[in-house]
Amino acid sequence: MATPTVQEPDLPPEPIPRPHLHVWCGRYWRLGLKISVTLLYLFILLVCLPLLVWELFREHAKTTFSAWFVAGIFMLLTLPIFLWGLLQHLLNYSQPHLQKQIIRILWIVPIYSIDSVSMTSLLIIELCY
Image (cartoon, rainbow, N blue to C red):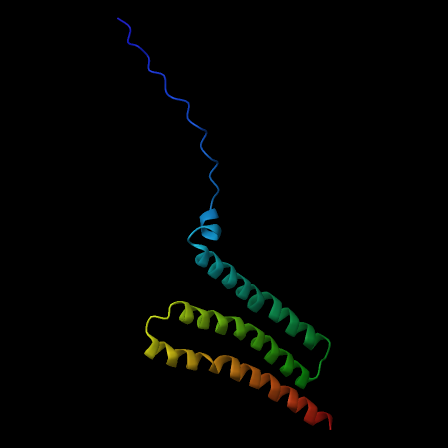
């Protein structure tokens, strides 16, 4: 005796899986942003900055210009880190009495980095006269 065959209903084709798309577009977008910013910083610190400093020494740049250049590069690297920490505390503002003090402390980073660049450029101006 033959058993009757059951026909399966026509199912739509399954979508093609896209690897790691959920990291960039889904609920894990912050993780994707952290990964990309970290990789960009590592590239800048480990590749671009040494190449630029080597080029300065190869061209026999003055010491004051080299100091100003390195201070400016590190100022540009500290500002996004400061903004990221500030934004994280403002988005997750759950303990105002504590986080107010943390935000005040975070402001030290851009103030000192901008101050170091301005003092370096003032030294260059002073040396010119």
